[in-house]
Figure (cartoon, rainbow, N blue to C red):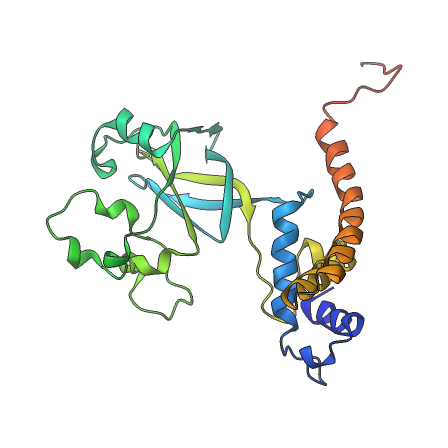
Length: 262
């Protein structure tokens, strides 16, 4: 069901009719729904926890930025006729191994990736490229993605460093010497902002999402007894999801008895 339906049921079950208007527009309910949604994502893995994100890379590209990604699991590079998984290095090991500014490394077939450190100190938070004139290495922290929404200035190659807070970065080395498609497997946050927005929790387990939202509601109003009782029921509801996930993870090429190989 969409966010609007979850909101309607949450308001009804909580008895907090003031958290939505008479036409079911948000008047505070979405705060608790999103808080519950984030809580579920943080404590319970599901069959839909991981997603795939694709990025077109041209020769010389070595940076990838991912919006609302809170965990990178795997990075693959794909071109016609081949697919290769990159090996993870720490940022420190990557710097030691290549020994120079990443933009100066000789291009080749990438074999490593690291999670980039995007972000500057508070003093330099609003710097742009002009503030780093004559310096080397600063461009590793510069966002190369278009600002969101697209109408926001500056343009794509001059996005301010202060816009980085919702981004996770990846660096691949050596810089590719031809075009690739990068496939990133990871976990991404999915905010519920518009009435029609949907997610795994709203579609498959809307009842559990509402329980989580009710739990957050009780916590914010310091009702520890109500919060503990709600959490007890919520934990029991999540148990079945955990069992399903375990069964899926254990299913490694099952062999049927008496199978005949042709």
